[in-house]
Length: 143
Image (cartoon, rainbow, N blue to C red; front, side, top):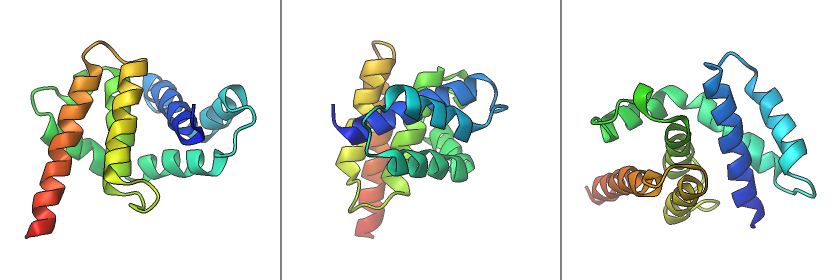
């Protein structure tokens, strides 16, 4: 498994735990523990921390985009996996360095996380939301 995919998996597991405890635990402590447990011989610790901290920094904006992009499924009612996979995917799609993480890579990685950790329908749901956001970005870029 590629190191960046492992990094995203660690971020997802850390966000899941942080979100499960209503954001009362220290995400950096959770993240560090998960890097130690799941990231042996891991060379993407910096990427992992940058991704997690970037998501937290932009959390309000990301969650607002989720609300607008999936209005039939209120964010509070999304299962923890889908909600946090969307946070990762949207952060990478909208706020990360496009040379480092191209849009299609961000979407594909999020779909894979959803398939690996989510329910039977998670991959389709994540694909739909991120695909719509990507189409809107492309249309906006044309204007």
